[in-house]
Length: 592
Image (cartoon, rainbow, N blue to C red):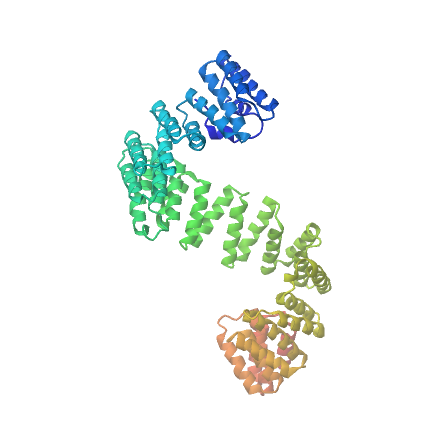
């Protein structure tokens, strides 16, 4: 048999013969093949020497050599090589003549016959094209491909006879009767029928497939995929029928799988794509349990997520990564899952392992730095910042990470230096970085250094940049600036406006209510201050260190109202919640 035509034509460099030689590694160079070499080389040499303009006499010389030197099979190879040369040169009529001669030498080659027929349709006659295809069917009675080619040709290039499309149907039905367990034939039949909008004919073909008794799981997988085209899930007319018609094919494939992981995995994927998630999970679970198949495990992870079985998904991913620690994709997936659950501590070791396994790109380093800061691993965050600055020295996103890390370690001067460097770099490279949150965090740092005027400037810049659709962030900055002014005892009325606005944007927020109560305290309205802060106190279910300041404020209000015993009670509670707060301890000692 000839090598399929398409494979030979795919190589456009060098002679067609050389391409054929490369693709026939199993052939031995006997006398016949050596004759092919001589014949093909002579044809190619004549063609090249004539500047791709060889005359018919030139080519006849090549044919004479081939016929005299070798068998008809070798002659066919020589014609095929010449046909490739002429086709590459755009000389289709000459190419056709040689393809026809090659087809005579190897009439059962379905690919060669179909290509020859297409050229014959354009450069000879339709009858000549049909003859090549019909001869191919006669020469290859044991395969369905020639019949499929004839049907495709009849469907694609209908003739003048209005009844000829029916002939394509007859050809396919004959082939299906002869080869009822040929899955490829069903696939090609379905494609031809659907292309002609003959849906009922496609249904009949699949009904025939469904009645077969073969135990070959590949047959059922392939015909199942064809059934997906006949009853597509995304088509409103077939959505209801989809599972009833398509499922049986995949169920038979699974039943005959005999522990073949590839078949089971294909069935699981079908169930997933057709939104039969429980069935998909059942198949994937059985496969994973039996073989620990990594692909099945990954599929099961996604299924568990979709089925809201988050813990099962996490546990499975953890087990998968023990077996395949270098799987970067799954490591990132696990990190993201822990982050969504706000289990940042569990995400950190995986973010570190990701960098160790894959070297880490810029986003991996940024994410690890963020996680370390969220989990208050400040020393690690600072070490990482030094490393990333060495790797990405002029990247403003990493200078900003350095600013945050130094601020977390209370290295304020270093932090300020990196804020300034970030602003300079970002103006030229990443202006989107200079947003409201950037200036808010810069302002927070300046406030921590008691540089209140500079902090106010950054806060005001942040307020101006807050998007209108982000009221939560606006409330943060308004409250920070207002509370800072209250602590300084300046701009009290404007501070009150900002704090009221923060409470409007984020109602019932205990932090902002505390600021509002403190505003009333600073204005000398102690009863109103107590009323607001007692509302805050009632909302606190489990007091923590972050609530110590609220109880301290209530204590100070009671001092002003002359309730010394109540003040002592609140100072004691505040000091117990945060023993490190010097001002709270001072208030407590003074009250005692």
